[in-house]
Image (cartoon, rainbow, N blue to C red; front, side, top):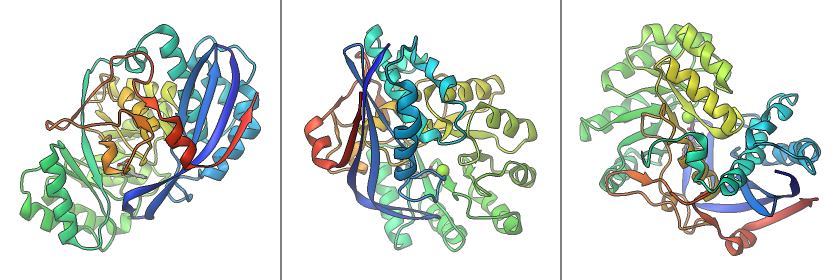
Length: 368
Ligand code: OSB
Ligand code: MG
């Protein structure tokens, strides 16, 4: 495919409810979208970074810079045999995986349309329906959190993830387990602890969590391996895994027993498939994480979740949990069984709503 034109834009989308993790609270999302034209077809990608460099180093501003000054000039006007052929071209740029993923994933969208297959099929996906969980942020009170959990269970979601941090952990989990003794439950710390918190982290074992996600440093593997030796609860790594090599090393030293795969964090579909392959070969289950994506990133997450190694419910849930109106049609819906039906039409399987995207746009730049 020959890339003829690339457009980047920033949209602002207010969340229906604030989302709070150990690193801070989000109320309005700033999302950079990438639109690529090639061979008469159009593909979309989404930069999955946060507004501030608190989850990873990337922000909308750094993604804009890397796309405008490097990734777009390197791709434009050139012929790419497949979407994954662009991944090695981006390799000289260290980091900035979320910016890379947005552009590469737009090419996967185009390739799927060109070949007349659903994106999930092009990736090698096998599931036609994916199991869904929810990630519930830190709330103003435990009562509000318990109500939210009840609402999501009533909607059918198969597992509940709650965010924890020092001061919002053991006591909160105690209350959750008292009210919901048997639900599939997990906790995500987003790097809020250190090995000095070992006693507190060990005390999580009594809650029979499916896993504890990224308890220690965002760039650490070694201390997680030390911690895993002390914990019965499986550790799942999120922030620390930037590609297949990190996954291999983490598994080799016993830093985790489960991996959360995020398209943005690993740099796109090519890298995400490699992570899945490494983990599947070692019998390490993976699941698809979320970054409060709009419908475009969400559609990509759904396609990724169909790969055979994705055996646990992900953080991929219904559009309505985030937006009053999503920017794709139809919006992403979850069945009463807590699953998403994977679209079987060619390409993304959802149509970006140009009118709504345009209305949410605060800046835009085109390259041809
Ligand atoms: O750690 O998984 C995370 C959201 C933003 C940044 C990091 C994380 C999250 C989530 C929410 O947990 C997942 C979602 O609902 O999209
Ligand atoms: Mg996480």
